[in-house]
Amino acid sequence: MLSILHIGLPLQPPWLTVDEGREIATRLASIRSSMEAAGYRYEVFHASPDEGLDGFRDRLRRESVDAVIIGGGVASNPDLSPFKQQIYDAAHDEAPAAKVLEFSHAVEVKALVERAFGII
Image 1 (cartoon, one colour):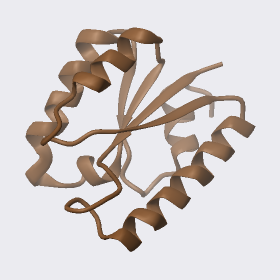
Image 2 (tube, rainbow, N blue to C red):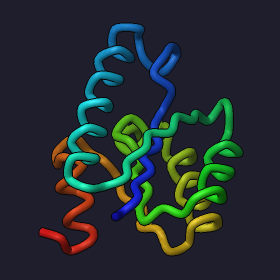
Image 3 (cartoon, rainbow, N blue to C red):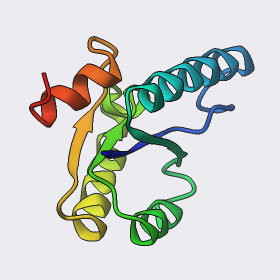
Image 4 (spheres, rainbow, N blue to C red):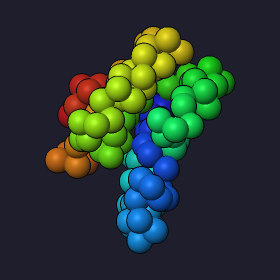
């Protein structure tokens, strides 16, 4: 069973409006359900440049993951490029065997993972 850790911004201001946060939370719950139904272990982790990545690093140390997915809010925002690089660095340091993938909303999470691992 592949283990996937999806890291994204907090679902609250200033990153999102309350309504956007609710909408994305619903979408993430749906993704989690479909990933678990397909036999994957899938977890969402929230972090921001303001809070840093200590918790993310701790999470990676506690339990190994096969892939880290950088959420679309970080991956698609040029202003967050330094934060995205910090995520790459943390994943490389704490889970060097994990693939780091970027979610772009153009491809479903399941397809992104399966392409990366040669499943489809």
